[in-house]
Length: 270
Ligand SMILES: C[S@@+](CC[C@H](N)C(=O)[O-])C[C@H]1O[C@@H](n2cnc3c(N)ncnc32)[C@H](O)[C@@H]1O
Image (cartoon, rainbow, N blue to C red):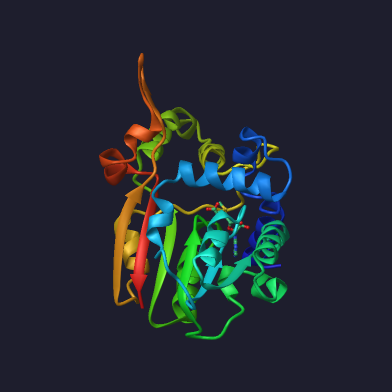
């Protein structure tokens, strides 16, 4: 089996537990009843208050593909804004969750619209979407460059992509780099690298995501070099503790996030 096939298989198993499960637990969400999902969605959109603003309020008729579905909050929002929504995820769990959400919204054919498959082989024709949305997923595929190429392939000329990838030059990574120095000096670079991946994504057993790539803003721009235009904006921050001084995360989502935020949001037009 190729390295990529092994990564795909590991991803399908790891992400079967919905990404967002720890947030769900914090908010007492343990089932997928409409009330529970509404509670989860409020918590998720409060935690990422900038996220919904990256998409138009009105998406009626826009053929939109979301890749990497997790708990499905963003997918539901896209469908509620009127888009002709399609979803893709490598794991069964998020696919089942999104189908359930679409069925509840009364969207036709949720089984056909939301599919299990890889971002590296998107099961759709060239130039078949007006918009592709992928938040926090393409950097887990094991081949970010290939995934961006696939996004470009399925977009029509003039279509747009919204992609979030992790920022290599974030305050969090700088802190982790410093803390990891002793391990790396002792030749335990691989352990440190796994700990970094775990800090970003872990399941309820404490395991780290099988693959995670980090890119700088200029690397991200280069990845989207085949597009007509690309804009990059940094978002998201951890709370900060410096001795007795603590800055809450909400206070850091403005200028500090613009400078050294955790995530890069790329808005690109083909
Ligand atoms: C960190 S979660 C993000 C989920 C959601 N977009 C969010 O922001 O909460 C990553 C998602 O990407 C999916 N994923 C990972 N590798 C993938 C691949 N090769 N193809 C498609 N989806 C993939 C995972 O199954 C998971 O649902």
